[in-house]
Image 1 (cartoon, rainbow, N blue to C red):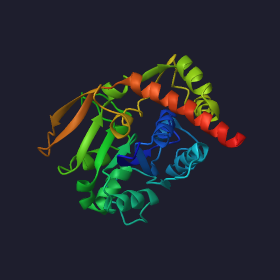
Image 2 (image 1 turned 180 degrees about the horizontal axis):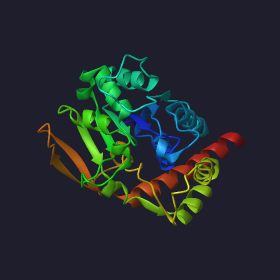
Image 3 (image 1 turned 90 degrees about the horizontal axis):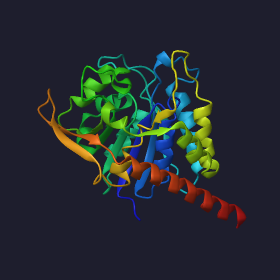
Image 4 (image 1 turned 120 degrees about the vertical axis):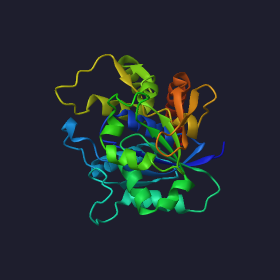
Length: 287
């Protein structure tokens, strides 16, 4: 198997651990060439002591170390505050530089920018160099089919979402709220599936058990793994999923909106790759 695309994964890594599970899946997928991991800030509503983009970059870097391997993607912290079109001049965050540099690079493999959080870093990169809009495909986990429905990734930085999605020449594949919520597993499945999948799986499961949550959040027996669907585009296949081409109400362009995802393929592939990673690690340590 050879890489068929380059991938940048952007997320607020110190928040919901499903982003870290998806990142591990990207790192373990040979059809991906993961070139950069960029971090965004966590919404202050969660009151987390590690809500900065820099905190998320540190955690993502730890996961990259846990996975190991010969190839290590660039890990870069992004913007620490919401996007503003007319913001005063500030130093360009490392994440924005990483996105722009990879989009400008001459490479025969297509580039997917996978964003599982607010579009802050993407907006800043497009403001830095508008020409990159035609050199990548944005894969966004966010928004909702019903525009009146609250949705975290869009609402955490609504100005960034409006700016990014207003680019008519930007190819967009979107997994909205109604779709990414289909990727739900029970907490028992998480505990057993991750906890019994070797050291890497146990590290991921520990992120769930140590997650800081405000008192207003009540957990049941189900956890949505909403950051995983882009793997169907970058590493696996979308043949068993469903999507529609929807016109953009502002630009007149269109975007591909996924309305159904093959969650069995995603979950089964993740667990198999975690088990194979553990086997390979054990052989290396024994040899």
